[in-house]
View 1: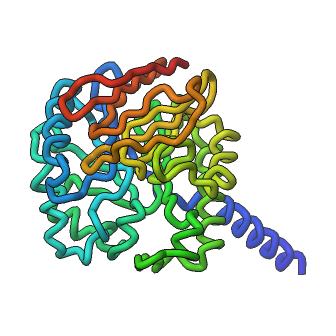
View 2: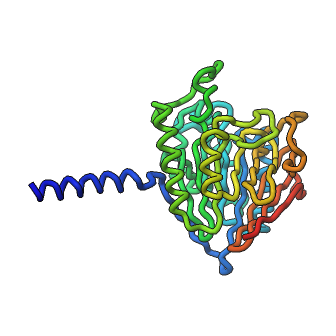
View 3: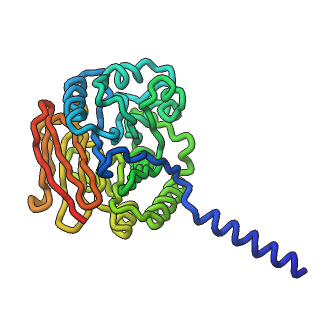
Length: 320
């Protein structure tokens, strides 16, 4: 009886500890520069087979990427318009990615999340290793953690949070395979994300998603993220939240708080659409095409926004 009790307690402890460990996939991108710094490009809402100036943005990314000697690229979603990929043999993959981002400096790893337009296609195609075999740079998951020296980036699938996609999808069809039941998916994701952040000892914590938490763009604030995701980011003292979705370049933030950065200018941009926002917080709103760069050291993180011609629109630095 005593042995049975000991085994029972051991089993309960195993279940407890296994259940309390984060299930988010963790990757490591090694730091190769002698000073330990990282240089990254961030782009979103791009996959239009070169159209709507996607090719011009890609060209400028290549120039800046060479100047900065970038380590990798982050895509904040809406990788393939209008309705994602049909499958892992869809020629849109090469037409919108491999044949567009051809500058030698962009021959680096790409880490991607999914956008709402990606969910209108075959989601498993974008997650497939088949695409990586076609183009080694491609890496896409729903949610994962990327460790790079002094920074940890938490990539979050924000699509299932948006109630409208389930209750009023209009004429769109979303691929919710492996997401339903939705409530459980979101609950598990938030639990795993919170645990991963609490375990992190990184100097910098950045979060990457597709939908905006704070934005003056056409889509506006994603209230579900404000209610469910933002409290976890604040509790874990996240430094930056990066997103796309709104087709603009944007910086909203206040001293000492999370900085909310939109880099959704990878191709088609929206003109004349800006919602009211506190001018003390809205540091940049650019309704054109472009992208963003990050230069990260142990003590500082510098962010620069570029337009389609490579002009610097805005820059700022965070310090530790």
